[in-house]
Length: 509
Image (cartoon, rainbow, N blue to C red; front, top):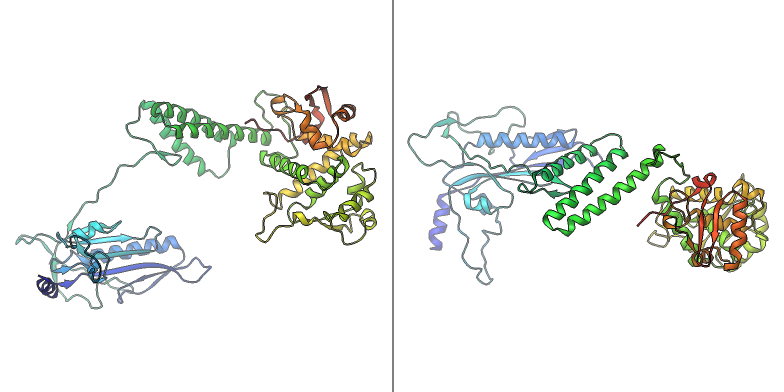
């Protein structure tokens, strides 16, 4: 039986196979090279990948037109290439029934999903069906006397595709090809990478989901963002996905609906900050830090200092906070004497010496040189604990462009005009920073305006509970606080309209 198979293959001709490739000409350039595995086809060079793909596909089509039909006497080109299906199992356990080719010979086309190569081959219909992604473009006709004949088309000119190194003999005729219509699936409607079932009911819900998918795709093609429009789309998506979840009892859809609802609220808030429009029609607040991400970064620095401050007391806490904001990205920064003298510290020189003495701060010279430095010749400082490690990461997630925004915001708070006029101490300025980070969007203290817990205040400001009342009174006189009430558990009230631009509102969970 083996000899019969070998004899049969000897009598048949190997299937034709050729590959069209797309490669870069030079690294860093957009120019591409189109080449064909047939030696008779000249190389082409195109200025861009898009033009190269178009030329490669056109070249492949010319090959297919020149191929006419697959030859019935040929055997599979993939057998010639030694594919895994046709390789013998020599020296291995039997794998079951041996592979056998079958069906008429066809022309099959396989393309790389990345658009880098295209391959055509003669093979049997059974092998074509077993090759992933292969498409049949022509099949060998059934032998019949009435089969129409037509001459083999010959291409001329540089780079014209040919099946072999030799032109077909003049006047050669081959049977006409029989086209095999390609099956096309109906387009699937999608939204958020989810397929909308064609039988989803009610029909109005399916129509809404399809329309939303089209609107989101159209928004992605916009040249300029429209946050109000995007917030409206997210709200519609939240309602539609909630109804979809109710219809199908799919928990993932309900979770997606909640995410869309949260995204709509965040986008709406960003739109209000950018345009000055508010939901209640009241005056808008133009904040110094105008994005929720910036507010969270400011709170992350504050929490880090609370957990890692090397010295106790409100003065040390305020100085460590300001130096951390100055050196947060690389562990290094510049400082002048005025930066320290404007914090309301009782003994700035002694406090800096304590920080350098414990190794938290490093200076190139003396503390006196630092206090005497001016803006035209600042003193470089280093905080070793903030220097990024070998992997390049530090304790904070923001980048170098965010750091000066956060540092500038804190400097504006502690150097507020009325705090300076009332000669506020370092503890009062640190208290003002703490309150600016813990308000709702309208300026009321605590999440949802429900107040701030006293244990959180004393932990951040480093004062005893009975020392909070003088701080509250000082901020009230400085037109920072209004309607303040200090109970055994919470501090309630709201910040004045004057300092609302300095606040970093808490986001509702």
